[in-house]
Length: 164
Image 1: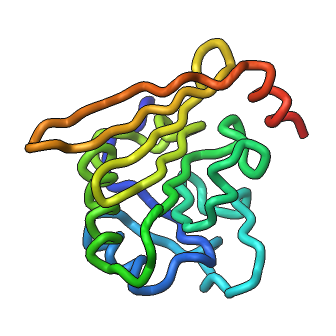
Image 2 (image 1 turned 60 degrees about the vertical axis):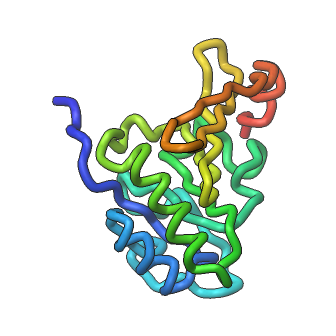
């Protein structure tokens, strides 16, 4: 039976502080820490240990790259592209992601998707049917939603990066 959209669970890694986690809850997400444990600074976050269906919430830009976390191996990623010292920008970025995806996407639809969240919009990276990766930039302008598609990566490059 297909899962219905609802509250998304974000699994905060060690780069997410308590204030950011609280802002995510306020934006409408369920938030857990690591594998149900408090994330420890300096410890490696292991995405395979996240709760079932949990989408990784991080500031670690390395996870945006395919070699660090291939699209085929992720159940979803939200990368905050805002400084933690600006709580309003963090709140705006999380609110944007919740407004676009929050109650409209099931956890299954997040499989293979990465979102780079900014206060004024986001970039979405998803696999394409031919095995390449597509990026779309989404932003608001005067109350209108704009989507711009970027050039897809070559399939051979993406496949090579996903290889173990």
